[in-house]
Length: 100
Image (cartoon, rainbow, N blue to C red):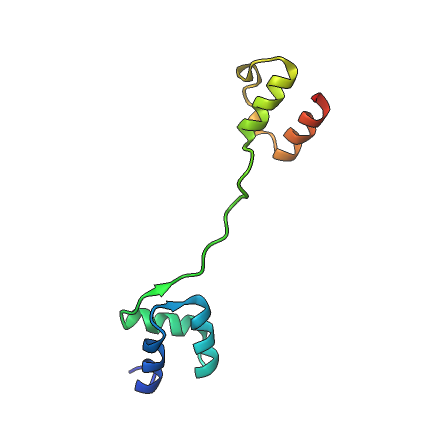
């Protein structure tokens, strides 16, 4: 037994490929939840394009890069600072600011 009428299923099918935003619009229109609309679309074999996941960390300097910059500022080799990359990024930035 389906929670969707043929008319509701056609509305979902007409939005193919379904995106996260389209699913929300259809859910509001049909009085269903967004997750239900997405699940129905998938069970109908329709393409679903999920919302892009945010990056876990912004692209930028890595801790290893910071340790290398600290080593250069100290006139040292980064091999002498083994383990320093386990410090927090904030701590490494603070050290770098003091040695430059």
